[in-house]
Image (cartoon, rainbow, N blue to C red; front, side):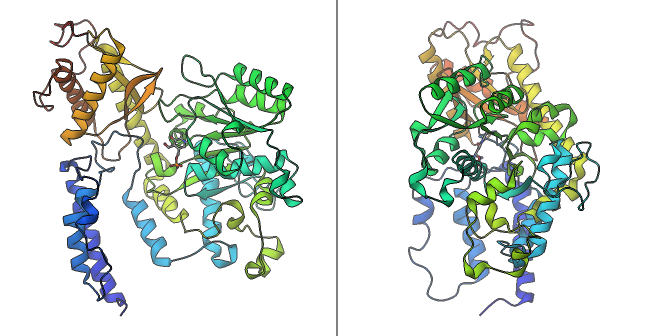
Length: 531
Ligand code: PLP
């Protein structure tokens, strides 16, 4: 009944061949799936097969039914949301994880699963210039020199979570327990004061709202601090809000700062926010889900400024480090707070290693009990590219984004909606449109036109209440020609949409994208009188 190892070899080879072919042709596929709601499901049998089906039949359905229902995140023309890179070493590491089939809830259920994770997360600390107090081995040397296993017993540590949302939830729960004197150990849910309040900015990712809701704090447990002109949290406003809340008898306990916000890549001033947190004794979490990978490059290491004062810091290698989903890292400065909040030890999980106190059981560092061997893919990726290779990838993405930024900046028909410090460019077409509602409608039409063309895919946000296109650069296969092509698509689509029509192909060339502002003749769409 089970495929034997020889059949596995054959089928796996066929699947790997299929994936390799997919990699070769992904650029030619429409980036955004054109499937209509229900189309994939109705193309498949409504009931499970009573009798076995062949692997070949399954593979044929993947090609015929599943693939058209896929949006191609690995396409070099994918500029939406954020990157979700699946590199070859990452895929192989994931395959190995599946092949070993390890469930690493306890150290004893597979020592290598825990220890490789601890090691690789310590590597990342050195690679990214993060503080040694997050190390799993208790190292205290900020210079990155080898920490001694025999040294100070570790206070901090790191763990791989599924997502940044889960990492944030764990941090909130640990902070909540610390702030309430670990009341849950004694009195349970009733002991959580409804006075608890957390802070993010108006630009913080929506997972903060969701996680606070899950943590029992609800909407009244969150205050959205205003942002400055760069869309970064205003630390003075944070301080003022905390003081107001304290005066009103509330209990501030948690601040979520963001390095690289989802909408625009704004970077909150973590060192100043950390000062405010220290002054009031609040837990500081830094969410660097997307942008954090940039710290691998010394020139972008300013993004970890203030991390030495954070209670927790997280980023997603599954976004911008070539590690296929899912892989989100959470570091904490005080592992005891996390473990005390999340640990429940039933009889059936007791074992000698746990009781010795000499090992880490990662089930106590996360919401689920079970866990996959995720560090394998991270380890494969780092070993394959080397730190230098990863730096080269990040640098190229930032270079391409900055090039696009300069083209936008140089074209009077376009505007940047926010600073673009790293790999995300937020832009708007303005042409000669005076009315902001009309401008929103035209920009939406431009984006939809491009996405429907299948030639590229980008997403949007609102900046200052205005519709804004986001170009997120980070696909592993992206090259300058793809970004140049997108810029041409944007300009062609703008010409068609501002004219109020759907006519014209979104594919034609619109001249030299690097043409500086004010040089040469204006494009036809400039000064078209469109209002
Ligand atoms: N935080 C930031 C800054 C993000 O950009 C995102 C995703 O867009 C998240 C959190 C949520 O990530 P995840 O899907 O890993 O929960």
